[in-house]
Length: 413
Image (cartoon, rainbow, N blue to C red; front, top):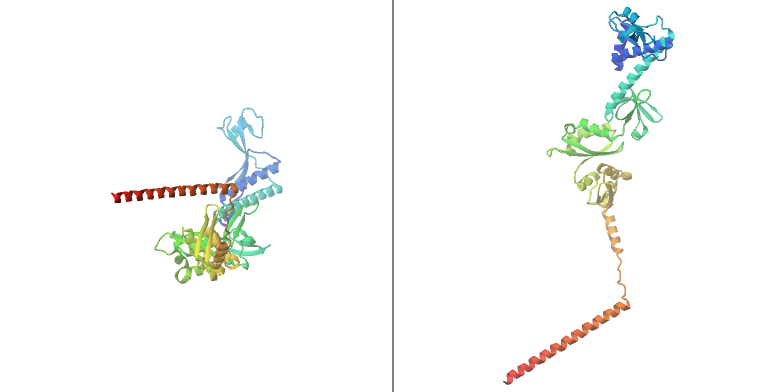
């Protein structure tokens, strides 16, 4: 056995405090390192029955070989005779296993270096696993970090035990990221690598706005007000749809706060990004009208309403068209993302012009000329109708004459 002393256990406890690596993992790593050093020192490649044992009471560690007790030894590396086993333990019997210490008197510098490498690698593996597990739990949540540097347009942010990467696509346009500044980021993804886990964070994700509202608005945290949808163009504008489960609580007013205190805090956190709070509605027409705000809406026509396509035509006053569309189409684009409806915006005059154009394009279709056969058939029918009328007239005249004769005869009598 090799005397280690209490210094090793003190070092294990210090590593556990600083890096969160448990003492058991470090002791197991030391034992594995002793076995690796033994194999290298003894030039043994396969030694499944070799193990290292650390006695915490005495502070000693040694390498032991486990052998099976047999009557006749065929493999001296894994078997031991009953007679030799009795010298170690008087109560041992055949087929029992005994542990025999095989710790070399001098490991040598190469063996010690091998043990050091194994311990170092195990510590790194344990640290990587701890960080991986920690940030896998934080995936999809908001965290605070400190900007370290900018490399190849990527911002490196320290978020505790590791540095996270903020790619350019997850940064706010025209935002200056100064090293040393604190920043609130969204943990987007965690990738396992051969070294420390690679954590991807975002400063432009819509969930950041949601998290900020949950922090600032108690009604959202309590579940009274619910965030239904968020559409964001980071650094410019955000639309958020909210709904109150309590009819006595105004969802929009709760998010704005007394004198706008809550929304002002969130806007300040987002570097003065414009935020539109709209009231969600189960009625698509009302929801679209709210989403197009601050522009006024004349009418909303639902063109198609199925699972694949949701098209709506929105008519606004002429002076509200540019406001409804927004700069470079930003307002209608965010309204589309917020509601999930494809929105086509037109002004009143545009609709009138289209209706006038549709009316002017109406064509009169003249009935085709009759063929000679159709005309012949028609003339025959007309002739028959004339003859029937003439016969009917003759019958009527005869009846009239007969009535007159009857009247004259009655008078003479």
